[in-house]
Length: 151
Image 1 (spheres, helix red, strand yellow):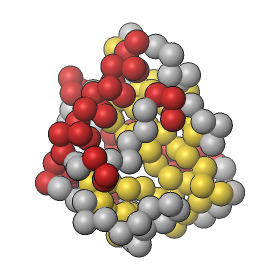
Image 2: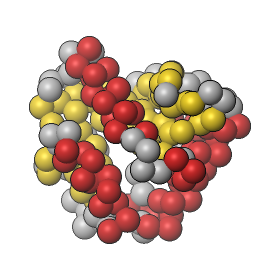
Image 3: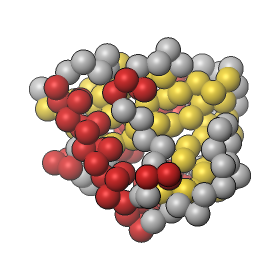
């Protein structure tokens, strides 16, 4: 699997982000959806990666710089064709390593509290993330789980 910085212009990545947003709409009320669309992902404070096997898109993930010491994981998604193959684990490892290289002291994320997000929460916990209070611009929301880890 090759993980590379993606400029978000390809049709495959547009479809995967579309799938991600559609899934969020199926599992979360509108006011609790914090997933970013293609335009929102193209901000200078966000680095976006895609994972490939040959010409096949496996998944994606992003790292948003909140400040010089704190990053946020965004847009973690595995293609529905490649679930349970370790794609998310490798992407998460890549993002954690990048956060360390940048000198961040803390890495945080928001995910859903519903059952559909349980596999994601288990993955994050396996890396050492633990529950925390809302960070950045987030507020208390029963549909959200906030997690963080010290680097």
